[in-house]
Picture 1 (cartoon, helix red, strand yellow):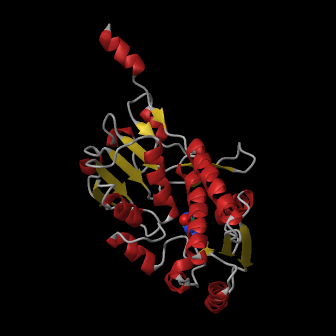
Picture 2 (cartoon, protein in one colour):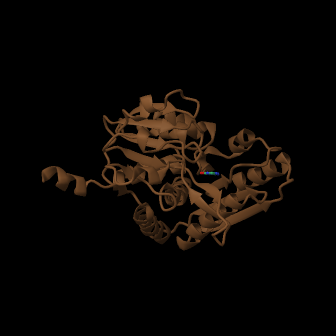
Picture 3 (tube, helix red, strand yellow):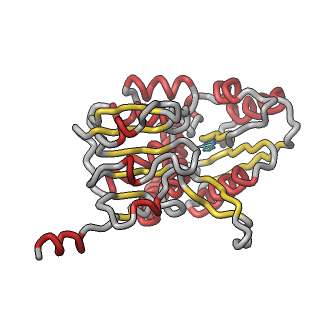
Length: 301
Ligand code: GUN
């Protein structure tokens, strides 16, 4: 009878992030009100997009909507696909020197003719609200105050919101990008967060050797089906960072979104998983707003 009972209680926990993102936005809204009441101008964000990648256009629109909903000032610059690196550098230089711009974000990926490294390095570290510049990346690694990249910061906020302990837990990250994998590892290693971190990639032989021992698995490869239920032990937490567009003629948009994790394979297993859509993707935008407020505060000092 007991065995039957525990079987009924065991079910996958869906770590939906809508409420987490709303809580973050509501606290930023309150803090912004106080900041403005204290005589400061509203935080301001400049977003630059080059070309017409549909996913990038959607992300940039969401960033603009979030900024507007908080009463932030928002400037958007849309450059043609064939814009030169020099044009983009000149735009960044002018945004760097403007008093009324606190944060600058250049949406990635950029067309192949433009070096993302040179562009990111050009943004003043104190306006680099993505946290991608070498100065902010280095500060994160050595534990100094910095802008923390929005997706890893959103993942940490999600773990905190759901009361998921990191100290002394084994975290396995799959993916080593500068946007997610590497800063996520640096963040989880920080004093006070104290996870034991392993970073794998899609070329790691026998991924299961690592994931089956993990308490927290963060999957950020950009490849649907990177892991399924057979890679995860009972009681583990799986954070799915992927947002992949899969053609789907039955949808008006012509596509549907899937993560990097084969979510359906988990059935009713005792595993906690962030969904796609409705998961970590929602956190990235709110964390960008938090970083923009942080930039405005620092520059107002
Ligand atoms: N492209 C995908 N994610 C991001 C992000 O967090 N920031 C920027 N600038 N571009 C992205």
